[in-house]
Length: 232
Image (cartoon, rainbow, N blue to C red; front, top):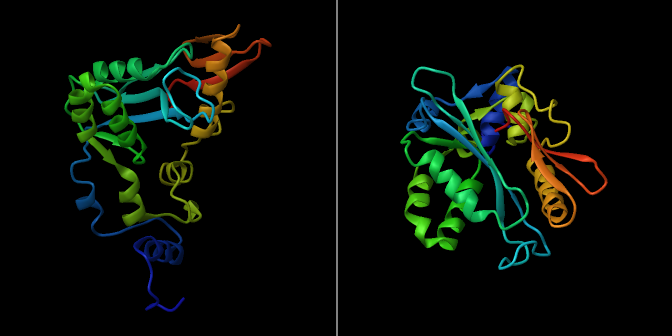
């Protein structure tokens, strides 16, 4: 393309990165990251959107969060992992919200996420549980979304045109990989497994966990991995 061809910021960054053959960051990246820490916590949600409602009082395609994973920054130590995983036997939303508040309410650090999804879920939980709304909205106000920052100010040839975390993280953090998650390696797989676990939990399936793995045992005795420790 000609140098004066009109491009979006992401396209301009991609062009610079590909011409240089390496990562490219705009000069305003530091300013855009103001307020993101360090130190900072990190948070990720998983949810189901079943077309046929699994839980009483929910509607088709309603977002039902069932798992959160977090890294909580320590003052002078390594981050500590915190998490919640529903057992699939009942609507998990209130327990999800209460466990989240218990983990984060005493803290004041910014909370890093990589999409607007977590904010949307917290907003929906605030509306569903008015008695928890103040705490959930305070937590929501601490969210800092890295995705728009990366889209606007960062590019690497290994992105291959995608800003998915599955592309971005390995490209910017050499040695980082998702290949050690054979059962659940993305949110879609987690959601499908969770729907299966919710159905199984209401029949003769068993939901359980070990020190390193969350799993569901279905009626056939097969293990379906929901999450591994260290995944955020």
